Length: 68
Image 1 (cartoon, helix red, strand yellow):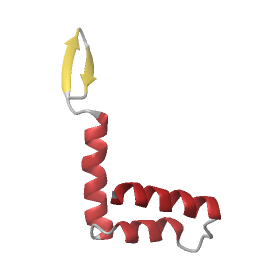
Image 2 (tube, helix red, strand yellow):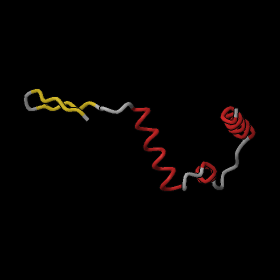
Image 3 (cartoon, helix red, strand yellow):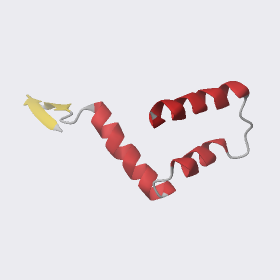
Image 4 (cartoon, one colour):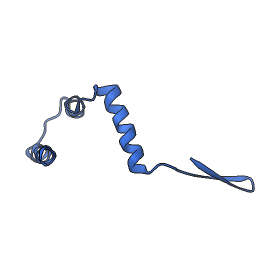
């Protein structure tokens, strides 16, 4: 963070792009809680919940797009 002082007030500015920060933190989260396993992450999200056909279709489309 970068800070600027104006009188008694301080203004803070991020030095890292939001998208880069989210990628970094998501990577740490996946390593720490899911052993870098995407399947473990998805199972945690949907544990005990029924996926509807639209959800399954959307997930399959997403996977296919990343395979090519």
